[in-house]
Image (tube, rainbow, N blue to C red):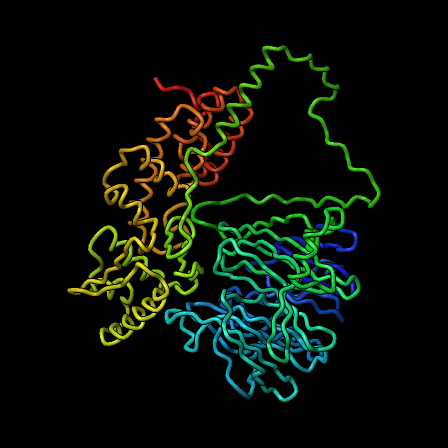
Length: 637
């Protein structure tokens, strides 16, 4: 969070508080003088008059409200009546006049919410706030902002549905509401049509001083490799303008979020991105943009000016990457925690400290290389350049009517637009299950769908639920050519023609439905291309697909190991990297890579490869890798 009065940004984790100064570009980590703070998502507000941070969690039994004093670095839990909620990506504002934090919407337990929940800092109580006026449909990813007068707040956008049930599907909203805190009324100002590419806003908006505009960050959150961009939204009519350049972000995990702040003193916008990893770790980055921000057209015009005039970039990365250990423990991967004393920030004009040497005496001057050594080095460099090139021609997919099941799930329509967001989790699981069985078998029996997808529902409701989901699936596929959902003789089947490209169908064709390895160099090359995109259903977490994943992964690993065994030259390292994507603890990939580096006399890279593997092995298996480096990569007897 950012303090305008102090001109400092605060980033807190479980056991320390980091203070970042955007003026001097310095960051300092300070440990708490109190017990560790239990953190999962790290939601917070900053109280300017009291100069303190309010940190809270809304995650069922872990729900709490805490107060952190940045000066004393003391924190304390202050809530009296915890509530059992799970509200991912809710909207929120801090009403300083009433000393109340107001939260709206969110997602949890397969439901979307539209309740207003307040926390009164004077009484330390949670309560539901009832507003009169039009009802706001349940949603999450809604943005909120306090008006300059302190008596109103704005609520914009998000995604959800009227029923608040995740299984029904998803709808993106482009509407603006004004909340009156005096009369407790809601007024709907307008609703705009959906743009060509759907998007959601981040949770914070910045109102302009004249009260005519709202500044906000928006992004297509359904893309794993997505981007943020600042926009200006007209409160009067909903007109939106893109400002500045875009910022890359990885949005694969639902906990990932971004915030927008503004410094009136420095005339800068700040974007803070918090990306969560799969194993509880997270990364925080801060970006700055000078105000007033210019439009996208001005940025493009500026980019075409001479290089000496375009030396200043609008978006400047201003903070170092901060990695904090998350509290999630995945499987049996237990990581020891080390208490780290924060390093003192050096004076502004001080010279950097020298790097300590491992040896106290200066090294002797190296003799000039001989002509033979030069030729050997040139040969090694040439071999390195060859070996770093891919072992295959990169796969170029069609841009229209495409279904990708390897790596992140992706679907594009006949216009080339990404429509992956049309597949809600329930619809996506239904679609993928029918598709996999249509490719490998003759489809799915309707009765089997009843048992797999609605096992706890009475029979009289299953038929209606299934019809609703099937209709949503047909609607999601109506903008694609070459694919049709059919129902014949009790079987649901997805029929694909050449007009629709599906990477999983192509894999089944090349391998005769995972029964035979390809027998031509061309087929081998194409299969390597497919597998290089990533693991099968990599972003789909459901036990329903465990068997299919195991089938594909076993086949892929066997094929890649065979290909590595056939290679003796440059493709080996590229194949090893692909195999390690599918099997991070593949000893075949480790031995082949180390052996290749040994042959090229690149022992430093061989050792680095071994060390990386040994670390991953220890973290996963809970014990040291039993094979020494000297025994790795050697030919077998």
